[in-house]
Image (cartoon, rainbow, N blue to C red; front, side, top):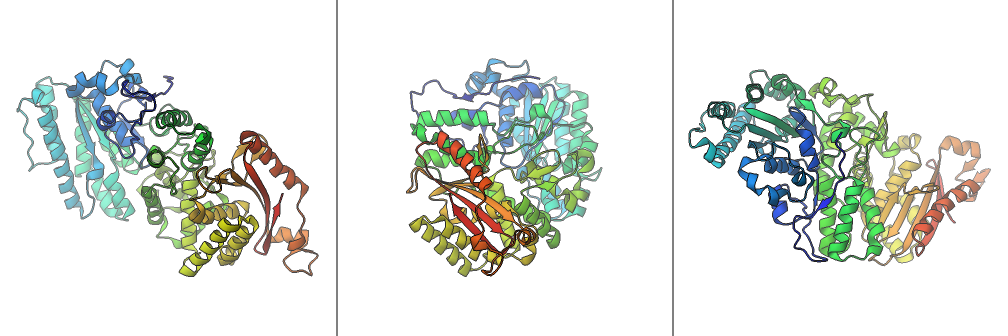
Length: 604
């Protein structure tokens, strides 16, 4: 296997010290990225590796960098841009180690995400042919020095027929081979599935349908030797199961460890990126640790190929943060790209037809932060449209959508705080918690009082009085300390994110803290840290302890003592925190939650 050290690449050597480079948020065009001299995490070693794979297909969640990778491939293989190779790839890995196939092909780059899937199948076919024929006509025009006007695209026939004309010309005139890139291959088929138009989906995948005919044409081109290779990206593997039967052999790379980091950023790549940003923008390096911790909590955590894979960042959402950060010099108040909110729509569409099953599934993730999944993620033979809406396949569906990731060989979990928040928001919506303006006013009063008094016990008491009190009785049979920690965090995040960031399960030499408030370095609580340890006692456990809410019980909750082991546990976390941030002003609390009967907050 090829082992490569990845570098953050500067396209130009003309920059002096502290030159502010461009953050490529929203850029999916490789040429634009180079022209703007933007930061670029070098993924070009995978170009070399892909040349060993026939017809590779690669699934990743939306906004994971697939489209930029496709444009990079196009620029690399495009015979029209062969002389631009030094400018486009310069000191990247592939720039210093070009393959013999660089600049060798006519490149057909199809983006299926622009195909509107509304309407019936006949309308979809017409749109597909119109978009496909326009792409083929553009290709013939751009490569006219090779085609020399001898290939005409006929708008009255299908895209498959016009593609065959191009392949025939390549064979007859001994032209450079065609390299085909299909980005978001499943975009319009996913629209049909998520709209519950399964009959239309199966008609789309019919052996004599226009889509399979198109892929059969690709297969024929591969067999003839007029197509050098076909690279396919998408989100869900369901349609690939159907298409592969027409296209013959597709090499599914999604779960191969060797290609796990082809898109997405590793921690090392993010560290390199932050180093460069801090140097170029002249940011105070004393803030670096806080910023790195913030983005690790909110954007890292994706394990795709295996439970042992290195965790990955969603690049688009990370670049959203860096774009805001570099623009203002401070972390943005809203840490979530508005586009991520569409993930909640995916959840609703996927689970919405079975309310009872939906509630059970979202409860499981909110309370336990994990869900069991089937033993092997085998999409081609076990994951198809018939199973997509099945309750037992919710976890795998959510895995491919990027809403869950691998925790181990048996469980999936939300990858980061961003995704945890989305599930808590849906939990609140399903149970109608905080659904009125009156609730919102009460929440705001609690938070405003905390900002004035910095009284953590009062803040938690407000959460218990106005959030926990709304929970349905049945929930308390299931809740645990993770539930209280997560819902408390989500409520505080809504109102206090201007002043604080949060860590959940932050690692120290003596363990992982449950929850931490961190005052933002540029706001009024700079330097403040609140470390919280949660302990949960079910109603049954309370009975054994003799703990009751009333004063005449054996051990009233108000008198329940702090346990020595809990003091030692949180002291270990705080010891590690003070070693890392000796100037921090640390407050520490242990919170006992007694079923639905009450709570105690101990200041240590």
